[in-house]
Length: 196
Image (tube, rainbow, N blue to C red; front, side, top):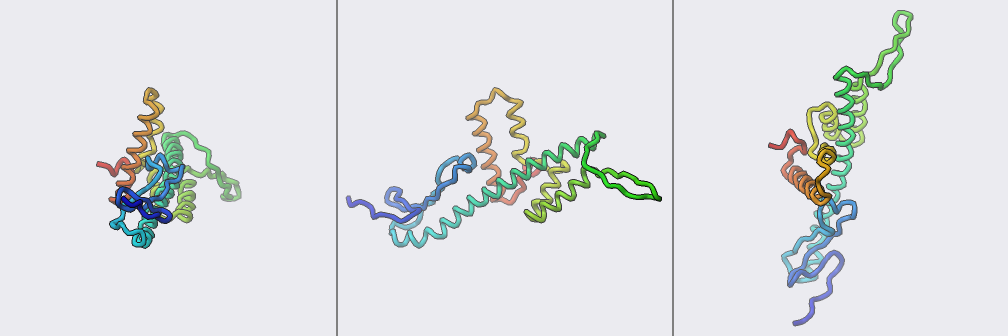
């Protein structure tokens, strides 16, 4: 049997078929659960595979870039959960120091404290400017307790269940990653409230 022809970058033989291979960055290994993304082509001709691989590589890299933007969203979700705690504390009557403004009313200085919701509104505007309207609105919904991100409470849950093995925790995080990927595919919000 003759040996298979040498293939170009991002291509490898898989039996008598050719497939495209794109490495997963180390920071995303947990998210994908594997070191490479692979897609088998419908050809055994190396020249044709070279032409077909371009679109496949773009698609696989888009999947990786989508995951990178997921990391930004995860960071925003974690920050929004911190804001939620401040909003809840203020709603419960606790004084949350956020700053104040000095106004002159009838010749007298009046100190008007900012509520956490006022400061939050300014912060949401900055997020919308940097990450877009949807990101800002999602941030506000989480901070105001209207939505709960799927991954937001998992670490807290792990702390409560200290007997869980590291492997089991990783399995749970991987399953949540798959659920989030499904949400992206089906265009479902990645919140506890959206999952039935």
